[in-house]
View 1 (cartoon, rainbow, N blue to C red):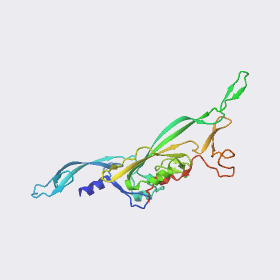
View 2: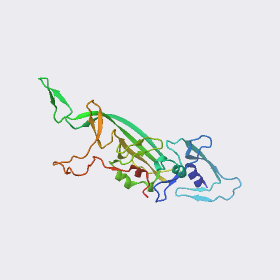
View 3: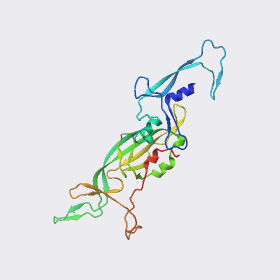
Length: 274
């Protein structure tokens, strides 16, 4: 009875081995405060009825104790960083994707000077004329945004390892939204860089084994397969870029355009490997 109660109190996640979505059993909601869910428990007291005269023995690997008649647990309720939705509630949303629940996002913008190759500078000679500085690199004001998406309470058998490897150092082939109501990132703007934190196995409050998977993405204005060309007014225009073709490259002028970064569907990062 105790085991079943505690598992239902803190909630748990399972995977049927074939579905792309996980099966979530939600934790116990706070009876008085909306948005709070049971996160941890602590054994506060236990005992036996005074009328008991014959105690059974519960033997574990570490000790032998008399079987108790009752236990009192203290439950801790928290407001999670993520949406808590049942399988049915998730199916009713417009996204109906696993990252619509049990995921949370953190972002860190990073302004920078983006170095680009080219004859971008000139110097003034003694006669007053200007001379191009050969082989000098130029820069344009730019920025990137590092995004960490943490997918919480993933059963250890449901980690999509092959999909993670496939997505490494690629950009998103389709628009994607990481959390319900969040930004939908356009095609080619996200570069997947793998894990943001080591993948560490842990035992949940329900005594099952899980991972919290933190994915790292970097956003670049204009996308990763563009070149920030300066306009005549000093602005920046993002133009498509490709692998160089011609006599001094392995690609002929008739070959298809090959971008610097290949693309794939990042949705598979949030799908069980079934």
